[in-house]
Length: 242
Image (cartoon, rainbow, N blue to C red; front, top):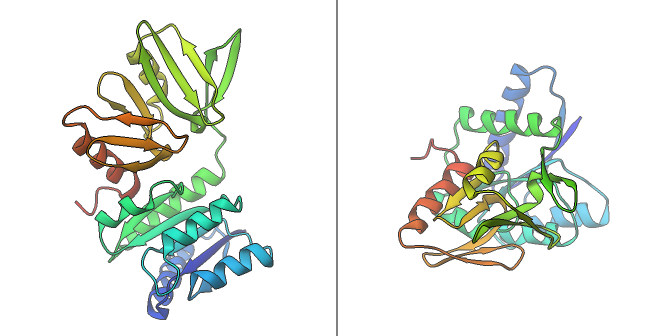
C-alpha cells in the first residue's frame, strides 16, 4: 500500500484531490493507497519528524498561509526524507521557486484528471521500477546510476562526468556519444556544445547561469536560457499548460 499525503490550506482543495484520487483508484483496482490530509505544513512536518509518518507521495501547495510549500519541502529534504513531491501551483512561472527539492512534477491549477492520472501512473511505475545504470571506464569498469550524474562537461578530447558524491569520471569519447548513452532518460539535456546536465540537479536558473545542487555554476551561452527553461517546464510541468 502506498501512503499519499495532501497538504493545502484550503479544505475544498483537499476534497478535490481526495475525490480525484478515489476516481483513479476506481480505474486501477490493483492500486491500493491510504490518504492523509493536512491543512498546514507545520502539522505535516511534525507528523513526519516526530511521529514517524512516512508518505510515499506528497501533494504540496506552493502558496499557503504560514509556511510555504517550497520551504516545507526544503525542510523535508534537510531531515533526509526522500518522498516524492508533487507541487501544485497557481502559475507555471512559480515552478522556478521550487528548484533544488527534487520534485517529481508541478501541476498548474486547475488540474485535469488526465494530468493528475498521468503523474500517478508514472509514480506507480517508478516505485516498482529498477534503477537505471550505465557502464563507464574508471580504472576498470564502473556501474553508475543515472540519477547520480549531475552533469557532463566537454574537456578537450575527453568528457568529465560529475557525480553527486563529487567523483569525476573522465571518458575518452565524444560528448555526442555520452549524450547517446544518457538520453534514455528525459532529465538529461544538452546545454550549448560543452555540457549535458541533469534537470533533476538544477538548484537555480537565470538568463546567465544554471546553479547545480553540487555547487557547480554552469554559464549559459547566448540563447540557451530560453531553451533550457522550456525543457525544464516540459519535464516537470508537462505540455498541457502550453
